[in-house]
Length: 222
Image (cartoon, rainbow, N blue to C red; front, side, top):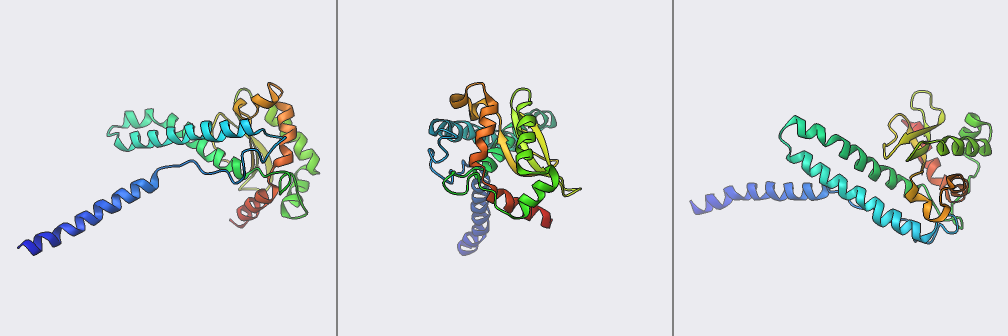
């Protein structure tokens, strides 16, 4: 009898352990930067990168984990509906910033360098030239009222590159994100003050076009 009792407990313990592992794996964490904090200087300062990554992005991660935990515990529809805004804001902040860090690269490495290839071809086809893309992108993104993001996205229906914006921390849903630029003040104010057009002009020097081309090629395969 004792032997049978012990045997019967093993599956329960295994299930419980797996549940704990699955729950731990589901917790969102702050991804490390793929370069040093000062690697994007002089275009984005070390001070901004430390605050932006360690403080702002971490806040979104914490908020998302808290919102998801509360949602999982909620046993009524009203509470779950009330949590939707927190999930969208913090989830979008985490998604957008995770993409943003990979979207940048030091100028001494891949930053700002767009070589001949699929991305350049598609940019020229959609906008006439790379410089025209930058001009239109900067004008559209600078015109955002308040905080938000500027995007170069691939329209999944037409397979064309388009410039779109999202408000606050809303993730880009309508298009496949190829390049995203954070236009929240925490992304530039310590260095560029209120002149966000200067920030938008300079950030092209550290845009990781190699990563952007990889996203484009992958998206076109879908």
